[in-house]
Length: 111
Length: 114
Image 1 (tube, rainbow over the protein chains, first blue to last red):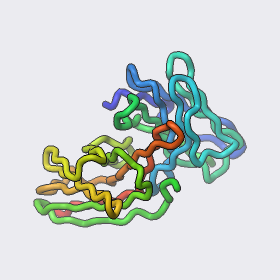
Image 2 (image 1 turned 180 degrees about the vertical axis):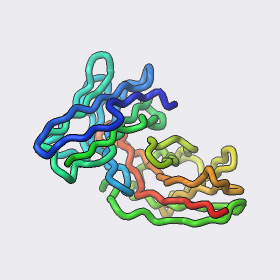
Image 3 (image 1 turned 45 degrees about the vertical axis):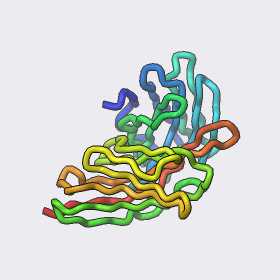
Image 4 (image 1 turned 60 degrees about the vertical axis):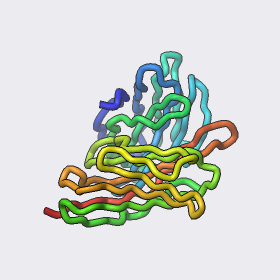
């Protein structure tokens, strides 16, 4: 158990819909990262937050947004969903100079 | 740029043999490197890390080698076991405008043959 909690574990929705994925980082970790992993592919960096502020952006679509709240949990919002958005979405947290600890992921299926 | 999505290369190894998984990184300013193991349907798990001021680090049955000259990282697994079957990713960390950014390699699927 990495200490990073992601909900929901599985989510099935239709094209055009909007979903919110939630992440609770490890206790004490201020940084939260979001990654997308499509079937049998690598981890694509989406966005990073540090103590409530956006710090870095990767290949995140304009239809996607995220935020980190004062209690340090983070949410990734995916809107106008397309079939190609079906993927595993991982959240990771870290201390400032340490390794990333990953959650178990949220599997999104868009039908 | 970021990790590119490609079909995963596969390494098949006989149980008991040693495995070597390779990774290339692009940012010569990367200062920290990590190997992760990802089992099917699970999140990546930390295996071992190495900082750029080292060229070798050993853990339990695993060794990471870093060659900064050619920007290459390898993971060696001794006496490979069936439980080692998974996808392995390397990650490199670089400082971009004061932000630490972790870039992942494409991953290698390790299959352990009985």
